Length: 194
Image (cartoon, rainbow, N blue to C red; front, side, top):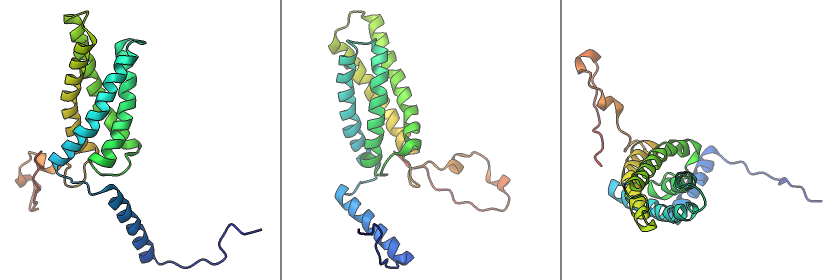
């Protein structure tokens, strides 16, 4: 019977282990291609992935709304599309790898706001035009989702998937005068423009 453990293990130095891990990371990055980190490039990817998920969600809400109340159908589809969208944005839009539970929960906050906006918009449509056709409903839903999407992009870019370059510097936002700091010298980096 063969042993499951190799009989001869080769010693590996810490540097060799780091080089091997870096080589794996480089190979993975080469497979996925470079991710430009500029705000316009990431916004274009956000529109591509978020818009694709949004259009699929719109169709799914229309189908599910035939079986359930519209707000319930929207809630179910929002949960599913948020999980998918967060993972896509983590991997491709912002290039941070897997999203993880913390980022999914943070993203859920902005998705909750988007859900409220889309539900309120369709609710107002039904108040104004109670027998609105599905085409009107979809136009209002997609318009509200587009506006909410811009807000989501800002939240995701600046807070959820932010790295050191895109996270706002909280000390830069402090309005306390420098004289209160005493003899300390501080160089504040500017808040990045979007």
